[in-house]
Image (cartoon, rainbow, N blue to C red; front, side, top):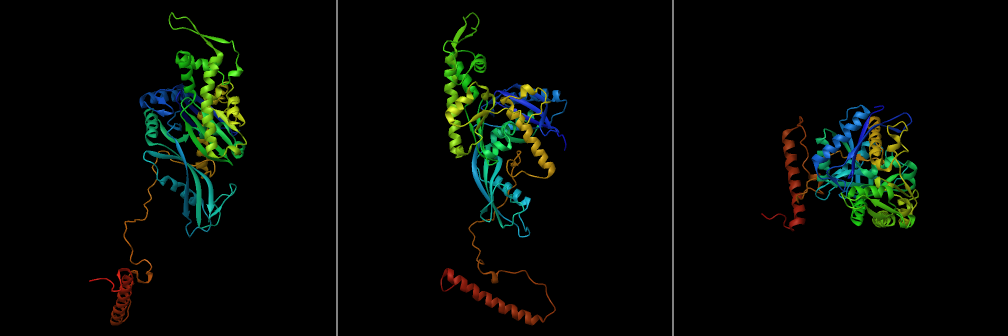
Length: 476
């Protein structure tokens, strides 16, 4: 549908933001409405209080809907948190005999089969990303689609992302309580990547690092395909809490200090600069050295980036990151974080701003062109691309994967194996055959032939059991 309106809902630890957008003639996304409110009931990316979260969602969605002058009933939702896990999997199917070439339905069948993978209790699949296709044991290059290839066996390696079922349900309940339907659930760094990366980045190799309030999410792309994902439980709120405790001030004061005066490099600030914090009631103002503030921020940010570097090394793609690291999310606004990241990871780093795919006529364009809105804008982009693919009847085999959308995978019943042995195995000649219709032949001859066949069958069957139970055959 042309100019279809898509809504993205970013349920974060510090904020809940709603974005209403559509594709315009330039190919970019125009944001028609935008609403933001403080997040209530969410910790480390996980919904804890469904009622509070639903109320925050309701306020953000109403603001965006009023601004865009549209009714909103379904949304694309981002998901993050330490409960997110990823793993490599492999699947294989045989191509039907009536398919001369591999067809698209065969590929879809292979991908869908991955949703039947055995998981740990309490897990649910949210993404399945194809990595590599193999036809008759011959790997295909990325530029060769399996559709149209001649072969009898189709195999693929996948990157599977799972989430905790209960946490998924809590998100669903909160959205439903706000009067909305979930169109799809998207891993937040995947959504952010849509907003701040392009095809050249993903082909060359890039690590997308989204530093939010409760979690730091990592997604690594190489050769145009997502290769590794992870979620770390440390992010911007941990830095704020360190400042609060280290300087003995209020949380809102700590957040303000971090944003306005904070630096990730101690050597980048003056020795003698001092900040005066108003005292509570009759207390005298509290003085804090900027260098002390930078030391606190540096310690926690260094810890976060060291874990990011560890995840990149674990992925085994560090040497392939030609496009380097892209930092985004609210934490990417910290002063000198780019330089600190380069120092720790020894990798070129840039700040990912979601303006490359954003139409300049978007409402509040200058405000939205900020790292903290990468996930929300990316959700709109993701939803638009999925809608365009559905309308075109196509499925992107590289960057886009099958959607779970809270629908349980169709059960496939495996062949029953209860320990029963088929005694006719290897004796095809003696397996019972369907009865042939009677013909106008001599009945006596038929009866005689049947008795003869029966004697032969019994003799051969006894010989078979003789091999199994002994030379005497079956004991009476």
